[in-house]
Image (tube, rainbow over all chains, first blue to last red; front, side, top):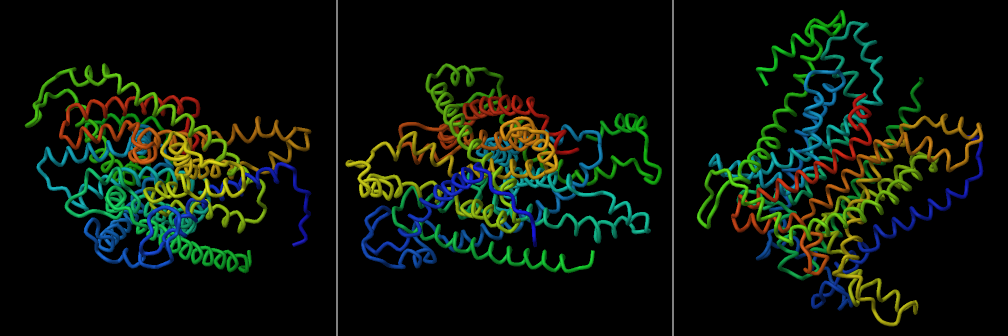
Length: 276
Length: 306
C-alpha cells in the first residue's frame, strides 16, 4: 500500500467544491420533502410544520379516492421486472451482434438512436393510434410494454456498446481453440465477463420503466402504473403523501445500493485473493 | 426486409470470410439483432409513419378522414403561439444544456481523474444517481416547498440577513423551470461523459505532463477530444429530454407558458389527431435536425461500435 502520493493540484479542491455544491443542490430539495413528509395531520405541502406525524406514510398504503398507490406500485414493479428482463436478453444479444459488421447495421443503429431521442409522448401517441386503427385493446403488457421497450432497448444497446468495447475477444478465441462449443463460450466466457454490464442494463431498464410517464400515459389500458397515479395525485391532492412516497423511495434506494455495493466490494476482495 | 436478402448475399460474397466460420458471419449477427430490429420497426418506426400519414388527414368533431391536405401544417405554422412555444423551449434547452454540460463534465472529470480509490468513486457516483430512483414527478414538486415564498431557501436567506423580503422570482418562473431541469437531467450528462473519460489511457496524460503540457493544454488537446463521444451523447440526451418535456414547464412556470409536448397533448385529449400529428411531425423533424447536427460533429456510431 506504499503508493507514492503526489500533492493534490489546486484543481482538485475546486472540483471537490463543485462536487459538494452539486450534491447539496441534488439533495437540498429532497431533504425538504423528507422533513415535510413527517408533517402533522393538519399541515400542508409547504412550511411551516404543524406538528409531527407519520400519517402520510400510513396514507400511502391506504387506497385513496384519487389514487390507489399499493395496487399501482405492484403493477409498476412487475412491469419494470418484465421490461428489465426483456431488455437484458434483447440488448445483450444485439450488443454481441453489433461486434461484427453486418448489412443494415448503420440503419438499425440510427433507428435505435431515433427511438431514444424521440419525444416520449409522441411514441405513446403513435402506438396508441396504431392500436386504435387496428381495433386492438390497449393493455399493460401489450401497448405499455411495447412503448417502454422503445425507450429501454436503445438505452440497453448503448450500454452494451460501452461494455463490449472493453471486452477482450482473445478470451473467446482461446476458448474456441481449446474446443469449447459456441454455447459453452457464451455460458462460461462471454456472459460472466460481461456480467457487470449486464447488471447495469438490468438496473437501468428497471429504473427507466418504473419511472416512465410520457410514453405510458397514452398507451395505458384500464389500470394505471405508479407514475400515472402520482401525476393524478399532483394535480388533485395537496397533501404531503407524495413527499412520504419520495422519502420511502429514497430510503429503499439507499438500502438496495448499500447491499449491492457491499456485495460488489466482497466480490472484488475475493477476486483479489485468487492467485493470478 | 426479405427482399433485401438476395442483394446482401451477393454483397457479402466480396468480403473475405474467416476460415472457421461456415455461415456468413453477418447471418449470426442478424439473428442476434433481429429481436431488437423487429421491436423497433413495429413499435417505433411503424407508429411514426402512421402519425406522419395521419398528419395529412382531414377531421371534424366526429372522426378523421383519409385525405392529402396541407391544412394542418399551414394552420400550425401560421399560428404565432407555435413559434413562441418553440422559441421558449429552445431557449430552455440551450440554457439547461450549457449548465448541465459544465457541471456534468467537471464532475465526470473529478470522478475519473481526481478520485484515486475506486470505492470512493463508486460511492460518489451512487450519491449522484440515488435521486434518479425517485420519481421525476416527485423530484419536480420537491422544489415547491424549497423555493416557495415561505420555503426553505427564502427562510434561510432571511435568517442569514442576506435579504429582508422573500424572493418572489424563485418559484413558478423560468428560473424554477431551469433549476428543475438541471436537477432532473445532469446525471444524463455525467454518465456518458464519465464513461468516455474512463476509457482514456492515463499514460497519455502523464506523457503530456512530462512533455511540459499545461493543465489547460491537456484538457483542450487530450481530454476534450477523447471525451467527445460522451459529451455528444450527454448533450443529445439532455437536449431531447428538454424538448420533449411534458410536465416540468406545466408545473413550475406557474401556468404562463406551455411546452411543445403539453400543447400537443391538449390536442390529443381533444381527439384532434390530424393537427396533433402535424405538430408531432414538426417536433420530430426539429429534434432530428438538432440530433443529426450534433452527430455530424462527432461520429458517435463509429466511436461506440468500433
